[in-house]
Length: 292
Length: 169
Image 1: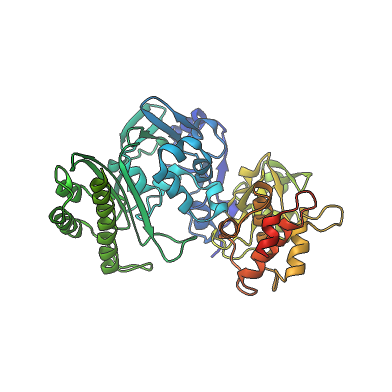
Image 2 (image 1 turned 90 degrees about the horizontal axis):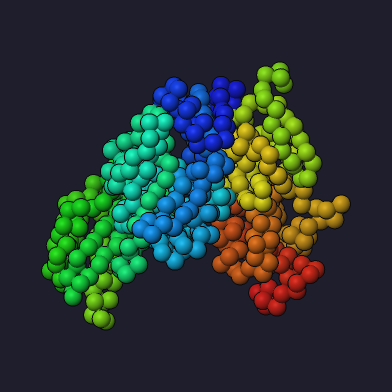
């Protein structure tokens, strides 16, 4: 069944304020579309349930990367190509630059946007582990104003999130305090290009005299939505990077993750690989500690 | 029927065009059905195979994933716009010389992806060529001859002859 363009309305008001007015005028009736790399796939297959769409493509207020004193703020409709080309992202947020390079191919990175990746809500979203490891915040905007929440509280279930029907995910705020943290990001997929993650893990940690003083672990494809592994973090926080700590953390991780069998992998494989990725990161951390 | 839809204006291969089609119509279908430019092909229809690749304002896009309204005001280049006044683009010459095309379905997309690469990186190494073409799938001739074609085109660009590309052959 092919999509029929005649049954969908699509408008491009051209400014953020006009888009917000439209969303507020009929809450829940309009579906925002940015680069279309998710929604147009559904459209082509004839399964796009969105009679009215509003374009976010080319709206300057949604497409920017700005460095402030505390944060780097990224407009929601910033593409992964723009993220990859940005010097501040490359220098300060290498995990996000790496995640951007994982998105599909060049032609997908040209069009796919950061907010689109998050709002789509895939458990395997490429940008999520990095954003969770960096303690990112989500800014949501409507005609009623703006609010910010930790990204770790954005997803509420499989393909569900906290956005109200009249709200847009307008920007992502990332704190600029991770320069001296140990950083890690790895995705395991079927092949290097165009593959969706079987498992991905992002991590940042700060050691102080051999003790883990800060740690954040962000995981993809280990739960119905991208998650912080807070119980695993708790097993590591305040501990020395020792063999015992590592074993306790791996036990915590295996108890915490809830992977499933699906077309891309099995729950068992995902559990094993997740444990291997965490071990790889902790061994990196231990190696760094032994060198200082 | 044409007046049911608002006019959309853009430039295709340097020519200004105005069309009246549903705004959600895919750029790929507009190019093929309304403008009769059948170079871009539909392979997967989901952004995986790259056979519908065209350039939009210089950037490579999968035209099957672009609602035509988002091309308003854009400059589009398709494979039909690669040859200049009847002279093939160096990439087209190289694909012919190196056997970079077999059935031809992927070729227009390969050419557009490679043309973008060579404009940004005139003398790419193999890793850059692989990354640039990673979203373009070929199911018959194999990727080596396609990569060789891109290397050859980079070497034969009339302006900057490349030592590296010659060595890579």
